[in-house]
Image 1: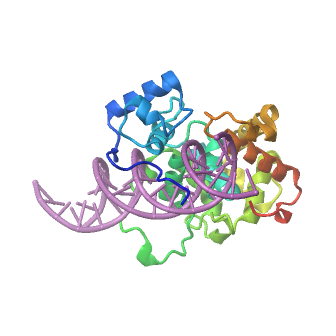
Image 2: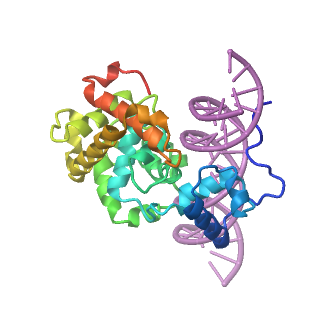
Image 3: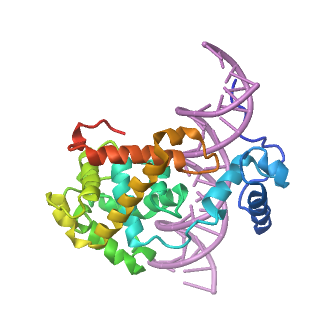
Length: 258
DNA sequence: AATACACGCAACCGCGGTACA
DNA sequence: TTGTACCGCGGTTGCGTGTAT
């Protein structure tokens, strides 16, 4: 009962979007907005379900999407945020302007997760070929330096401790949040290791500023108030709350898992 | 040069949460 | 208060492309 199929699959097109469909969708949204995704394809004359339209717009057609490779700073941010937030990709995306949750998720699964994976990986699972793009991209050197301490691939220091699953990263999470707050104060051993990447300090102070600023004008109530066209505002405010909570809390280990 | 394999990205699927009648 | 419809999110899959053999 209850839930209707997300889209009437009869007669609706699936698979890759054509440039023409993209144009139609963009034109329609620019003109009418996207207050109702379900009705949108009909109004726009697209043979797609609303869900598909929404996904296409959010992940690809939005004008503020930043295309291209992730920078070392962005990758670092993803790693840190993932340590804090777990697989809450939309929340992570909210901290990375121009990046979508889907994109971040892909990058995580294809690049970052592997880099953070411990070298305890059996030899049989080791890549048979040398990685192609990652080692060719110049920014990767920064990332490698930056991740060196936490990845067994570079320095075999019990990588599981900094690993990515939200359930096992509580203490590490705090170090990330803590380094955000006290970006000039690197007192813990993990933060000593983070001295290698100077970019982070400025980056995180910016990120932090963004975090606090965005919560100032909207507040938690606004999270439930609307802005229906906003993709991430609700999550953003939610995460602002948690981030502030982390920052204010002296000891994250006493906090419940998010 | 051809083939097999691995990677990366875009898209789909299903579920949970929320708004609304 | 309950049921329905819709939205958004996270997980997963499929395909195109690049690389090694």
